[in-house]
Image 1 (cartoon, rainbow, N blue to C red):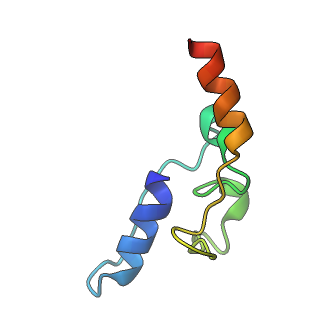
Image 2: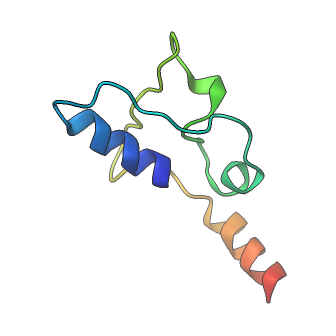
Length: 73
């Protein structure tokens, strides 16, 4: 979620020339997002595309989140 918001902010800033983030695997991110953002598999010529769609352009797997919350209780 943070990477999606940061990418949108960076894209809207006229003076932002680079955006740096971790593109390595993140088990929590992979578990709760339907389409991961800031994932090395999504790089195009070394650049991350802006997520599309409503809001920040990401889809959260609500069932996966519920499962993680149940495990932590």
